[in-house]
Image (tube, rainbow, N blue to C red; front, side, top):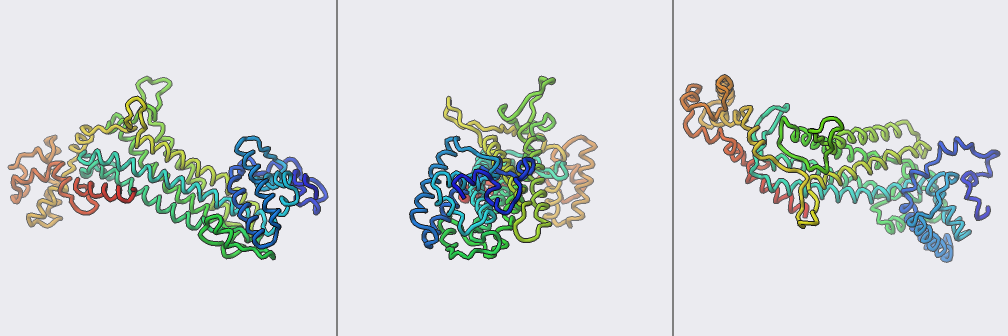
Length: 477
C-alpha cells in the first residue's frame, strides 16, 4: 500500500471490496465533521500507544521518533486551522493517520499495530470526556461559591418559604440559596464519581478479542493518567456506560438549574418582585415596551429538556446492541458533545449571573441579581406563615399537637375574617381560643422570632445559616 492510499477511506480495507462506497453511504456513515473535536485526545492516545510499542520492541525507536515528529506537525496544523479534514477518510482517526503516513511514511502505518479503531475511539472519547468533566467540576465549584457569596449578604433577609407554591413558613433567603448549593455539591460529587469510571483504558482491547502483540496496557494507562484498565476486551470496545452516566449526571444538574431558573422567573415577575436580574441577562419585547423578559433562566429551563432527551437517546441507543462494537455507537458522540456544550455554557452564564462580573471602571464586582428584601418580607407577612409557630407554642404549654393544630386553625379563620395577620389579633381574642396563650405569644408570631426558633442543624435560623456558610466556605476553599 502506498503512502497516499489512506487518502481514500475505502482503501483502508479495499482489498476485499469489488466496488467503491457510494457517495450517499459515504456521507451517511461519515463522522469526521463532528468527531474531529476528539483530535487532541486521538493524538495523545496515539503517542502513548506508540511509546509503549517502542518500549515493547514492537516498533523501532526510529519509528517512534518519526511518529512523534509527525504528530507534532499535525497538532500545529490543526491548531493553526490549516489541517485538511477529508470526508473520504470518514472520521478523525483515519484523517490523522492518513496525514501522519503522508508525513513520515511507513512509521505512520505501523502506529496502528495492536489496536483497532474500536478501542481507539473508546479511548479517545474517555480522554476527551475526562477533561470536560474537570472543566464542568470547576464551573460547579464557581457557581457554588457565587451562591454562597450572595447568601452571606442575605442571611437576615426573610423570604416566604413555599409548599404547593403557597406561603408556608418564613425562611432566610440565604437558607433558600444554600439549598441550591447542596444540590450543586451533589452534582459535583456525581461528576467526580463518573470521572473515575470514565478514566479507565480500553486501548489494547483491539477489535474485540485483544491482540497477539505483547502490549503493556498498564504502561499506556499510566502515561495517560488513567486510573485503571477495562478488564474485558469485549466490554472495553462496546461499553458506553460512562457516556450514559455522564449524561444522567448532567441531566440532574440541568434539572437543578431548571428549578432555580423557575424560581428566578417567578421572583422577578411583577406579582412577586423579589429580585431584579441585570439587563444583560434579559431581553425586551418587540411589541410591548414595558417588558423585561428573563430569557436566560427560561432558556436554561428549556435546554434541560434537550439534555434529558440526549440521556434517553443514549439509553435507547445501547439497549438492543449485542456484543461487541456496532456502528450504532457512532451515534453516541453528537448527543454527548451537545450535552457537554449545553451544560458548560449554562453553568458559565449562571456563574456570571449569580456571581456578577468585574466593572473595569470601578474595580468592583457587580452582581447579576438584586434582592428586594422589603418585598420578600412583605410577602412573608401574608398567608399566616407563623401559624405553625403558634401551634408549637401551645404544645410547649402542654397542649397535644393535634389539639393545638385545631386551635390554630380557628385562630387563622378569625384572622382571615378580620383581614389581618395572626400577630395582629388582640391578646384577648387569641386567649379566647385557648387560655394557655400569654403575651409572650407575639414573639413566636413574628417572622424574626419564627426564624430564630428554628435553631437546629439544617434549620433556617440565622445562626445555623451562618454555620452552613462557614462549612461551605471550608469545603470549597
